[in-house]
Amino acid sequence: MSATAAGDVLNVAVIGAGRIGRVHARSVLAHPGTRLALVADASPVAAREVAESAGTRWTDQVDDVFADDQVDAVVVASPTPFHVDHIVAGVASGKAVLTEKPVDLDLRRVDACLEQIRGSEHRVMVGFNRRFDAGIQEIRQRVLAGDVGEVEQVVVTSRDPSPPSPEYIASSGGIFRDMTIHDLDMVRFLVGEVATVQATGHQLDPVTGDHHGAVLVLTARSGALATIVNSRHNASGYDQRVEVVGPRGALSQANHRPTAVSYSSAEFSDRQRPWVNFFLERYAQAYAAELDAFVRAVRTGEAPSPGIADGRAALLLADCAVRSAATGRAVAVEELDPATATAVAPTTAGGQQ
Image (cartoon, rainbow, N blue to C red; front, side, top):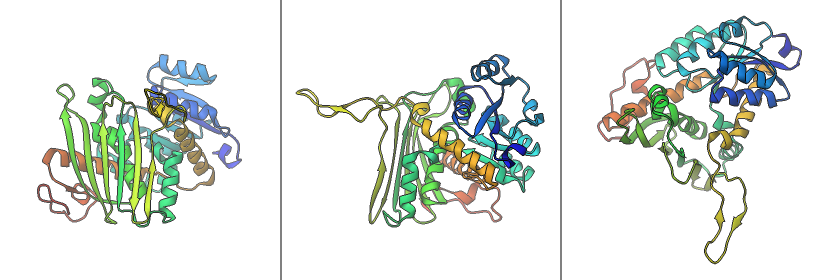
């Protein structure tokens, strides 16, 4: 990687010209240390549209990315079933990789990916962009500084304004692997490893078979309890809140609005604008900060965070949530981990371990 070694601009290719691929393409274009060198998508129309708007090259053959010596790093924003193949090919071709979550929907495929890139794991970063939100960064730093004391409770609220299409949900892996996985990673980011997961799904969609919402209670190895509240729809908008509580105090992050101005009159008190519309607006800063962290890791040779092991851990927790919602009992993480050497007896229905 001559460009990175010389400290020059990092040449980045984006695989995937859909909604999230376009987000990453814009981040690459806006970063002073990166250049969008290539856009790849199986749809030549989509690839051309994104590339031409950025004044760069495009291809409908993904293998072109890995064969291109001008490309230093790859952002994998392709559909989830292709993530593992693109991660492995990217590492094998000597490139750094930033991949969208989840790494895969099957934990065993993630393990196979880890085996294939063993020794080069430090070249892969997983896109849990919410870790890079400025408010979440401050909460984590203040937790580590002891501002709340030993964390006792975490509450993560994540409600979408409206559900995605049935076609999207059908191939997404379901609410826990697609939506909740961000919040599961957030819990690990704030309180460390999780021991058990108890999940209850709300209302099954007759078309997709997926839950409209869910509530999860996680027990961390530290003893902290974390509650995650999810919904695919919310009349008041994109609801994104986090609270961390300990014996010395509490830290919380409220929803973002386009402005902090409020209006009061004879009819209203503190009337405010609606929350920002969706993740593209709410986490625009986080996506930019995520890319910046990736670029720094590539340049320094340090292992990025979150890494592929974090992607595996979050998917394992999502699998536990799926099992818990189906069985009505708490699920110990070791129970579903293929890497666990000794089988762990399942917990009794409704019990905690």
